[in-house]
Image (cartoon, rainbow, N blue to C red; front, side, top):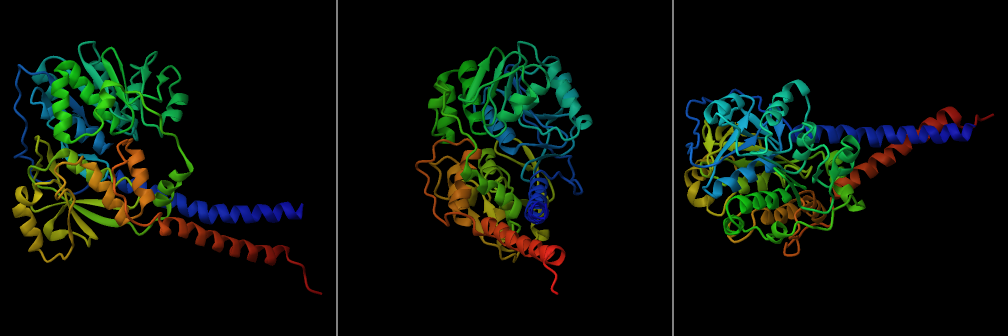
Length: 450
């Protein structure tokens, strides 16, 4: 009995120190990545809204009151806008600043009520990014608006785990759907009336199209464009993005990803890599939405990096296709950074004045032109490669897997094989736990000396 008690104490101390410390680190990392805008809002009087053309179909890309997945929102928005055949708007319950994962903040073009009034009917396409339901009262308007506009004339396009938001409405019951490989088993249990498909990049059923993880949303969006406009129009968008996997648009079948032992890198990075890299991301007028996503959904979602948005003035920044972004920091008030990321192959021309002001600020932080000389490559590729150099190869590989990015054979990943910090810290904590448990063992169960 005494042996069992002693073993139990060792286990309790080990779990408390190693597991408890890791849990705190993991929660803090998740909270940082999903933080919401909490600064004094700039003047919103000069917010730009793309002109409405009644002859074009309208795409509403949703934002919720708390936080929305950055890739799921930015990339479909850009793709529909690139066709120049749609009115494309960011739409939310109200016009207040909304946050995307990784700390990027956006001002909706319209509230739900404003869009209803302007259109006088349902949008032609509603894009549903992943929107974590953290507070049901705050989230409820999104659910109700999707349900209100779920008629057969409106295409409902869910991106990645946006399928959970769609499932939450009840509109997927009895239907098939795709979602992110990391969440599909959980959703199978939570929504048993839905047939969850693991081996397709997207699933199309009537007016509902659902995609698997993140970059699968590119395939699903291209599929919708090809069906509504033409295959040529969809191919043109893919070519302009340098997207290497158009074959999935034609045939969405894939070998599914599954959780594996190598994925422990992601867990350990989130739990035990406490010395997060602080990377600034320069927001400038004309920045490309996909290029921005490459920074936030590669570095910011790796568990290794905290991304901070920076601009020269406290006013909205307008992206290439008309999104209004708000930076959390201005050049004069930036905390100490490890690097300053500037996205876009033409950034040194388009953002010349912003870069000049940054260089004159005496901040001393190195500028990383992420897409310099990369105009012919898909925007995510250089981010994966730089992440491998900044952190390690295993972290970069999982970043690609998390994004369900398949065209990895041509990536040039150079760096450490794995994170010494993320693996080393739990080992040190484990040794500390054994020392403490051994002390308790000797103190209360050791043989008394006669």
